[in-house]
Length: 88
Image: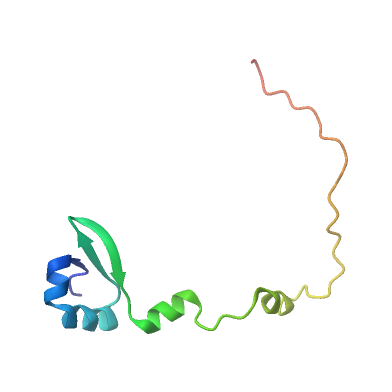
């Protein structure tokens, strides 16, 4: 496995290598004054992490085995019970 952290100047000077390593070995971090600032990630990995063409939340729920189930979602309105939290 190759180096995964690059100083900004080194990243600029060796951009082709940085991109190649991001594609073949994973995310590459670029630092500025020793602080991590950005990560270079291959497009395939980025799309996999962000979901690419994600389905809508509604479609996700529609695929649920509970879709169409008759669930009781009413909140319990009974009064709360008293709890002794000790001295104070």
